[in-house]
Length: 431
Image 1: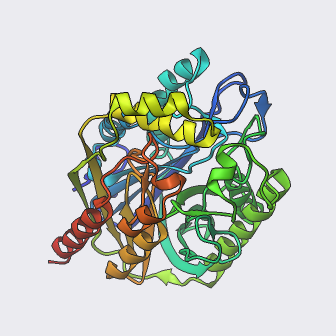
Image 2: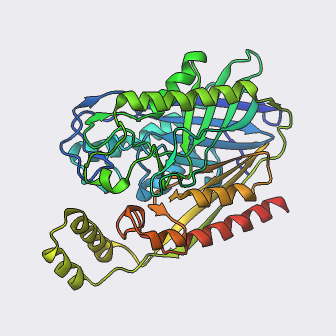
Image 3: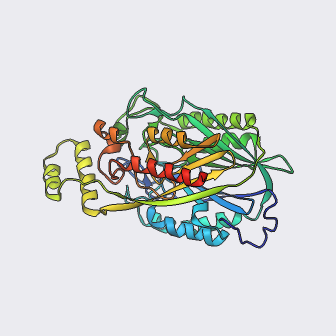
């Protein structure tokens, strides 16, 4: 149970109460940005602020707190401490806490994909204080609210980046909290699958990418609303360009600039607004539940150190040499096994599947089939980051997302184990 123990919440058991906050976590210019190995230079300025946004809600003595971070990912090493901070602040257990990243590639280096500098280190040291402030502040303005849940399909923005014309999960789902007294939109959670990589390696401005315009579009019509963005099964989805070409800074046949980011963000934002206007009020604020299961999975085996060194020394192709060097990094420094936290959250009319990876489309679609509720969300980059999660057949196709490196190292059968585990979790919640 997520029983909230704070003294100023005195109306437990009397309907739904919701509180929100949004805290700026923007680092200073001069930090190393993360997401492109070929990016040159540090951040030279700020285009838009980064946030950690929080919604805390209480219904029938059960309390949840969801936090969305404008980061490429949340470092695994700090997830337990962040969970404890929120747990101590609110008096709820970790299975009632969701921490997820929006996956912007124009934010500070935190995952080790690019080596940060002293500014990155100092900024990361104060991130827990931002989280604590956001969690606590969300409880200062608790209001009686009701829910709206709905979804639509957005097929224009997200494209399969590995196979032109290949499958994507176009589902865009929102969960909205509306003040009972004023009828104002207090918070909206938006779930959609697309890499926040519309801006390419040449961008040196700090920004949340297209997600900035998702929020601003919604806020234009609902001033004061807190918008939390949760990315979906985006492992093989961007706006339609090759990950390999992008990795090396080669040109692609799609504009990747602020104008395009604004266009795509507005489309997603207007989709969310449309769903909100069409959705009906959730009448039953009945039982909610959650479950956290941790599974141990193997790390893929690479070639020997000696073989990799030999291949690196004789390689003339820049891209292949990069892949060899990254495989060597895994072979030298990664453990044999890792533990993945899988979180299942059941709310009125909504099931949330939360994974600490970047799932491929097929995985997201399979999870949706398991849902026993009218709507569902697949939330990637949740409660940590363990790289890409391809399906077994995708390894036969090769490509960046399946190459052994710090971004892709889980055993080839991990997706099957995850799907099996979620199925068991659903069955337990249903009984």
